[in-house]
Every structure is written in structure tokens, then in C-alpha cells.
Length: 147
Image (cartoon, rainbow, N blue to C red; front, side, top):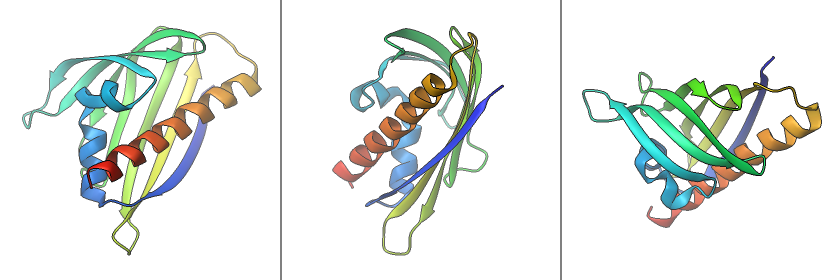
């Protein structure tokens, strides 16, 4: 069964900037600490990655998974579903970007995680919390650094 989590942060950058950073998937290894390698398998008519294989650090080891990206609600939402993974059966999620009225953006991160191997609940929750907190913190830092 998949575990669902949602976290939010406010970024001192426009929603367009936050979307730009999050959708520049090829650049993730430059600023997302747990992402070690990105291979883009397919792009849409606008050149945006639609199928991406990641190699990342997780659970003290390297993991590999492929995500299919959906830009149908861009630039307000960037969403994805996992199509393949070595230790995860599901790693589906989305970023939602909403202007906060003061020039910044509230970023909401939704994530559904299901492991292929059963793990104790506290370990799954700790891993999910780490993934989300790290992703939001690093997205915020990247978006604000060049804003």
C-alpha cells in the first residue's frame, strides 16, 4: 500500500521560476544532492523530458527508477508517475506552484511511495520525510539563488 505525504514551503521567487527550476530535470544532479545521474529517455514536442531514469542515493544505497512526467497543467503543476523502479513500486507525485500574493510562491509537494520490499512504517515515513524535505529545501535554494 502506498503512503501519501504532502509538504509545503514558501519560496522567494515567482511561480514561473519555481516551475522552470523543477522542470529542468537534466540539471537535477547539479543541485539535488541525492540525485546522482539523470538519463532522459523521451521528450515532448516542446523538448521537455517526459521519460526520465534517475540514479539516486536512498536507504544507504544506490537506487534506480524511471518517471513519466506530465506537463498538462503547466506551469502551475508538474506531476509524474513511476514507470519502473528497483526498490520502489510507486513513486508518484507533483509540485504545485501558487503565487503567495507577495511576489513569492507557495510550493506544495505531494508524494505517494510504495516499496517493493516491506519495510517497517517508521522507516518508510522517515525516508519519505527526508525525500520531501530535501527536495523542497533544494528547490527553494535553487529557485532563490538565481531569482
